[in-house]
Image (cartoon, rainbow, N blue to C red; front, side, top):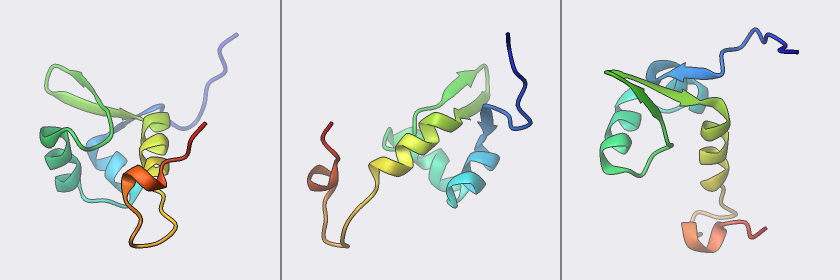
Length: 76
């Protein structure tokens, strides 16, 4: 049985930016460079999955300002 949630699973770029506390332009530029969160594209519409945004945020977790992405990644 499918349970309906009050929160949408997919967020527009504007809503994803608010969700992450980033600017829309950062997400747009990151999509071009390929260093932002993964997204889905339907024609001209770009949307982000909440789980992907959460994983992107966690991947940027650091213990100090001198930590690099390589050293800070959590090994599972």
